[in-house]
Length: 182
Image (tube, rainbow, N blue to C red; front, side):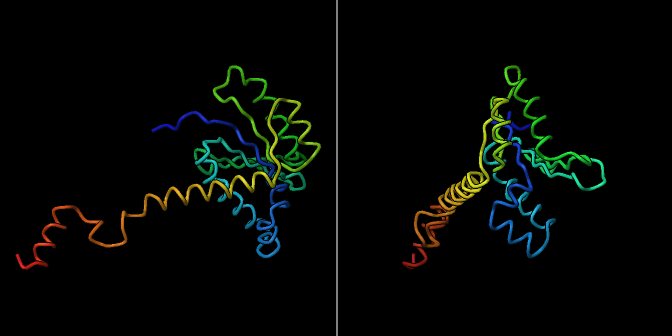
């Protein structure tokens, strides 16, 4: 089964978000950068699927002497580690240039960049992408978690708290007969 077309492409400046979200900063300080990266990825996995976004989380390897690579986490989320000497900002700018220039012929009508870097905000908006601050992304993720929980709770609730209400009518009738000695 193939998924429907994404409603938007979400480009996330990974280290910028880790530095802006208090929960990720705590994880980074307590358990290390790798743990904070995976916490961000896990958080964005559900959010991306729920929103229908094609999410790309970008981490710089600017100071690491290694080749860039891509990891596909789910059909909605990919993680990119940039090449040596390349920043996440330059990767995002190139992606915006490519995606926004082809939007008229593309199946996706929106490109959103999540970062709190002011210079990056101005550049991506110049390409025609939308900008979302790290705090706005945090708020949206939390609101989505709440919506999913409410949806799940509504499905989970039965009409009443009694076991008899969760069994079929025939079994309920038979239990009533047994109770009355019939």
